[in-house]
Length: 439
Image 1: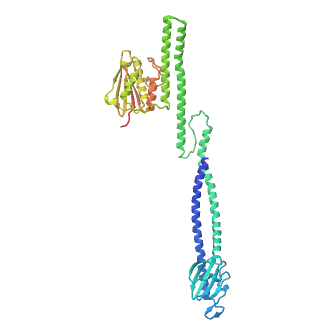
Image 2: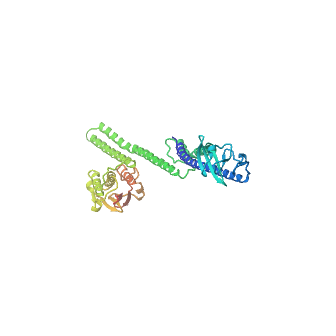
Image 3: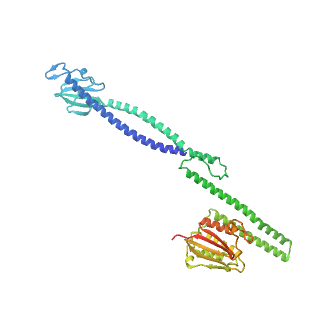
C-alpha cells in the first residue's frame, strides 16, 4: 500500500467519522426542530380558529349551541379541526376530521384513530373546545423530505472533501517523490550528496541523514580502496624478496644457501607481521566489535602489552605503574587497548639503541588513563610529526612496515581517546589517553 493511499485512508476515515457525527447531530436537531414547528403549527391553527369563532356569527341555533361552517374556519390543508361544546356536541368539523378526534383534556396528545396515528392539540376557549390534528404519517413524510433535501448537499460536500483530501495528500507528498526520483537517477556507485531543492523543514533531517550515510559509505569505500592499494604495494616487496632468496637457495649450496633461506624466513616474518597489522587496521576502522564483555584495568593492559612486546626486547621495558592507576577501569575493549600500547612499545623498541631502555608510565589524568611511552632514539623532525599516523609512512631510520602508529590512531578515533607526540633530542615521547568508566 502506498503512503499516499495509507494517509488518504486514515485521514479520510477520520474525516468521514467526524462528518457522520456532525450530520447525525444536525439531523437529530433538525428533526426535533421540525416536530416542534409542526406542533406550533397545530397551536397556531387552534388559536386562529378560536379567533374566528369569536368573530363569525353562528349559522343556526339549537338551544344554546352555536354551529359554524367548516369553510368559515379556514383550516390549513393537511390538518383536521373540530370545534365542540363542553358537553361534547360537535359545532364544526373540517373535512378530514373523524368522530374520535375529540379529547376531553387540553394540550398535546398522540392518538390512534382508525389504525392511524394522529398528533392533536386541544384548546379550551370561551365555552368551546377546539382540537387541531395531523397524521404522524404526513409529519414523518414531511420530515423525511426535508432531511433528504438537507443530506444531498452534505453528501456532495463530503465526497468533494475526500477528493480534495486525495489531491492535497498527493501535493504534500511531492517532496518525497522528488527525493525518490533523485535517488532513482543516481548511479549504483555514486556517493555524492543528494541535492533536492525546496524541501519542507520536516524532510530536511531525512535528506541530511541520507547524505551522511552516503558520506560514510564513501569513506568506507575510500578506506577499502586505499587499504587494497597500500597492501598491494607493500606486500609486493616482501614477496619479491622471498622469491629471490628462495631462487638463490635453490641454485647454491652450503653457507650461501643457509643465508638465503634465513633471509627468506625473515622476509616471511615481515610479511606475516604486515598482514596481521593490515587485518587489525581493517577491523579497527570497520564496524566489527572488540567488546568481550569484561572490563579491564589500566594495569592489566600495561602488563599484557609489555609481555606481548617484541620477543627478546621486553626486558628493556621499564614499567612505572602506581597502584591508583593500576586499578583504573578502562572504557575500551581490552583487545584494542593492549594493541595500542603494544604498538607504541614495539615502535619505541625498534627506534632505540639495542642497549637503551624504553619507559612506560601509567597515570590517571582528568578521567582518562594516560600511557606515556618514551624511547631514546634519534627523534623525529617537527615537520614529520603530522606524518607519523599515516599508513606505511616511514622515516629514514625506520625498519617497520609503517602501520603501528596508524593502528593506534585508528583505535584512538574509535574509542574517543587522545594521542600526542613530543620529539626531543633524547628521543620521542608518545602519550596515549584512553577513557575510563564513570564512577
